[in-house]
Length: 146
Image (cartoon, rainbow, N blue to C red; front, side):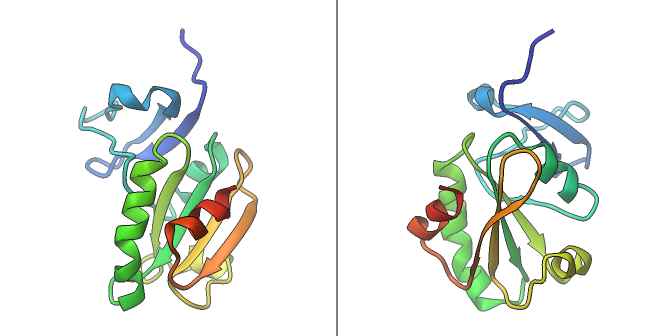
């Protein structure tokens, strides 16, 4: 039995199955245990009320959550920056996206008043360690998890 050195639990975007992934072995190309499709962690992962708490609580790396809406212009402008950040920091930071229209409960819990809002959570335990409202560049994203 192998021990996961940097585990995180993520939901498969294809079948919805929750999977434990070792971020220390990200180069091996993790796959869903159920449908065998790739778990792509080099981009933001959509999170819902079904998996948000588990992902935050079990993450062995800092987690940055983007609270967004599809209709939001600044949120769309922020997307390429988040995509690049997730790709560059793959295995070191997990980037999640929460649609505030589809999951208003999570937004209410964290007092989201404006979007795009970014919240960084600490390793294991899920306590908030930083917040940024509005557009952010790569340096600001990095500072959230530093």
